[in-house]
Length: 176
Image (cartoon, rainbow, N blue to C red):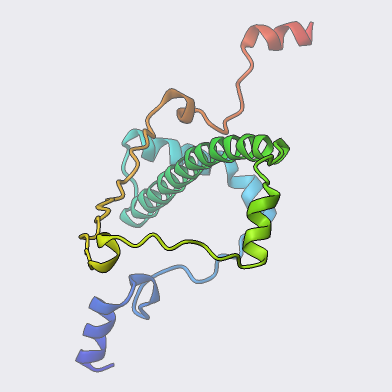
């Protein structure tokens, strides 16, 4: 490749798509291997998380995984919080709509309806205001939307989606 093509790949594309990247291309891992190495892989993950350093590529891959997992959790939690707020709005709107649909409009007047239908002549009340062209300045609505502040550090979200561990006493009771 020419130097310009390498520079274009280096600066303008995602590093994943570069041809000179030393990524593992064959990720066909059998289920037997996954089961066989399961405990060792989990141990390596725990050790890297606790601060023990391994090969640079392994550490970088684990950091990328942690970054993506945390971003996924943040996006999911934000979506759930906003959806809960939206659900509250829809329940309030449904209650208001139900109340307005049940009321009967008793403001019907047959004389007004007849006047409208038969185009009865109305007396023109002309005064000085009808001859003047008064222009009022338009009222500007300076509504500025604000970004919602969502607290993603609550204790409720810390253990969201995790299964509760049973205490050792409960396990001993089941065994005996």
